[in-house]
Length: 131
Image (cartoon, rainbow, N blue to C red; front, side, top):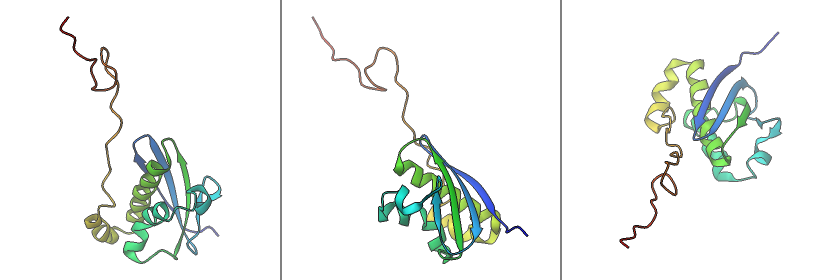
């Protein structure tokens, strides 16, 4: 007898998060560690990634099993938030109408721009010398 689970992928900068949503008691597991430990007990990160569940009032109804890699903790948090919102949408399309106005389904596409030849960074040029 297997329980129903919903999966989705979220991305932000270089971070990728696979989110598995299962009926449960609100436990968050990231890379086989408790969510509080993985995100350094930072309440801002934890409330950000729980945002889609809080918007629907489901924070204690589902367990999250997350595999996160790449980027930093902030990027991974935003990737988890997007993946969670997408997983909720696969569960029920009516919930999409509640998540969309809050911006939980919007992919933040901003990433680091590549370095160009002849420049010091992506856009920083060497100082001009007349002589």
